[in-house]
Length: 200
Image (cartoon, rainbow, N blue to C red):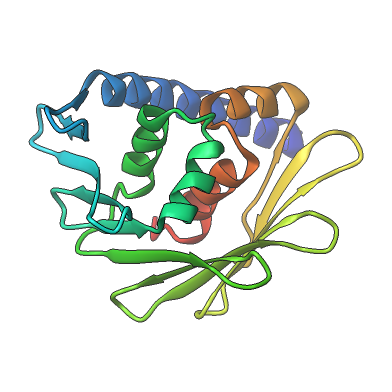
C-alpha cells in the first residue's frame, strides 16, 4: 500500500513539474528577440534579462541580469549548438533555464584531451561531464559530488546521484524529454542542477 501511495505521489509531482515546465518554456520563448546586431535577447515582465552574443575572438557569451556569465569557445559552442539541432533560440532558452537560481557566477567551458567537458567558475568550483567506458553519462565535481545517467536494458533511463536522488524515465517519458531538450547531455545537466546542485 505504501509503495502504491508513493508511486501515485511521484506521478502527481512529475505531472506538475511537466506542466510548470511547459508554462515556463512558453513564457521564455515569447520573451526572446533578436536585436539589430543579430544577437539574442531575453526580457520578461519581472525585469529579468539575458543575452547571447559573440566576442571578437568568436567566443559565445551568455549574460543575464543576475550577473551570471558563461563563456564558450567557438568549438565548444558548435558542439553545444549541435545538440539543439543548430537552433540558437532553443539553446538560449536552455541556458536561461540552466542559470536560473544563480547569481554572480562566471563560468568557462573547455574540453580536455579525453573529450571530457570541464567547467570552472569564479568561486573555485570545477566540474566535469563525461562518458564512462560503457557510454553512461557521469558528473563529478571538486566537492566529491557525483551523478550518473544510465540506460537500462528495459529501455528506461535512470538518474542517480551522491545525495541519494534516484529517478527513472520510461521510454515515453524519455521521448518527450528528448523532444524538449534535444540531447541526453542537455537533459543530464538539467537533472544535475535540479537534484544534485540544488539547495532545496
